[in-house]
Length: 180
Image (tube, rainbow, N blue to C red; front, side, top):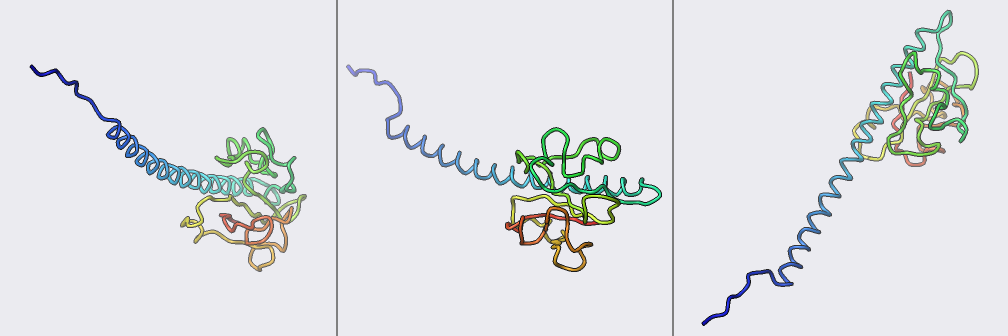
């Protein structure tokens, strides 16, 4: 008589299956991280366009002299999670329900960068930017790359030394920036 054998997997077979599952999981996670990064960048670009539209509505509503809201200087006190956004808080709630915040940042980096030629009075120019994560983003071909030292950016210097080129404070070159 034969003894009944129990069917099952050997230890080697189980280890091979676990290794295959691990490799597949790492590939999926890498793809997921790339998709998340691209999604955050798409949101940043959309937020910049919404803020830009709100700035134009604000400009048109100012009478008798149209102008943009003056930007405050870049400092920790000028960007927080409740109210302040480098001067953009003047847009809410009349021109935009609330000022959008960067989807993946904290502290003073949660605000999009906004600057004007001075911190007081009627402003005729502004510089607005978001720092993207993907250096190959196609949006970089249509942004301003506005540096305060280059003609055509609307002003010789912005509040807080803000610069959209490859100078301080943007040494990364990953700023998607717009001007009026």
